[in-house]
Length: 411
Image 1 (tube, rainbow, N blue to C red):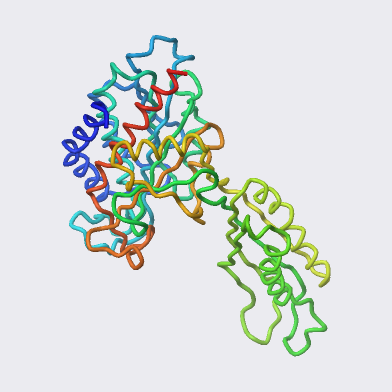
Image 2 (cartoon, rainbow, N blue to C red; image 1 turned 90 degrees about the vertical axis):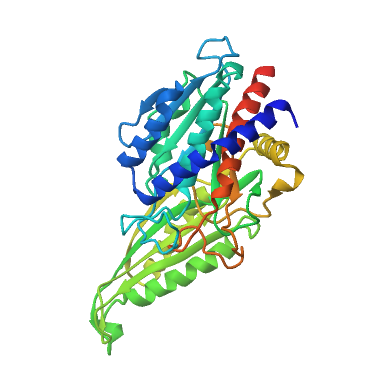
């Protein structure tokens, strides 16, 4: 282990109590969506003495902080640049975790660990500022609202976060804690797809109502909708490679008012997940075509709303291996475990990785005494996260930035 790495670990350990205090303060006052004024204020208070170039979002309460490294003399448009991202928003859940610093709002909760991401990135901001003179380039810190279904990353990309330093960043890294995966403190990632693309399907089947005793005199949208739901499940195994899976789950299904009346319309909604850009694009044509064909076969009309949400989160191979090496340099060979398969959840950090090379890394924050097989998962009102990993995430953010800048400068 190098002297620089040892210093990062020591500094992260010494800063851990302050990082934990920030995390607890954020956890008590979670905010949701694109507007997080109290969270933004706490981040700005932390950054104020550190000498970052700060810019705030226009359509959202984002914070972009740029640190100019002192070991690079090139102009802003040519200096190596690395981006680190931490999301800041909570979820509309009433907390039942039982922690001492539980949410005080009553109806919102940091159930996905974004308070930890924000605190770790703030900690890294301090460690990086202390190393400013030795940084071989610039660092962009992306404090992002609205990850939970609001596409905050997309907003920040459109508002220029990737070019905040004066040029497009050369590499980007994101970190996400997990409340019930692996052993506490262990990092995991894989090259390629690590999280699925996410789309929304909204379908209205229109027929002609009638009496339930005489379906031949009506045009029944219910049976057609039921056929569509089943046909979607068949389609994913007949039109898509089983080794490049697609998941379609219908979560809303509505029709009718009483049992002996055939309604005029039936309606359903589904979430669609895929793990490659090819499948993501194919779905956008295949799903409407299937539903329209079934409707025609029954003499009905169908209105299909297909909403693309997030693309697949795809790690580049070089940056994934770089991140794994950074983890091992800090914490030893057993601190990193390769992911066996991607997660079926989705992430708007995919917007960043669609534009620049990078990696999204997971960190187990299984609470003390917890069992990974039974602990409450992220997004549960019972989810708990271990504060002890805050220092590990802070150190990794710092190591990724310093080491990647040095690597970019050397090339």
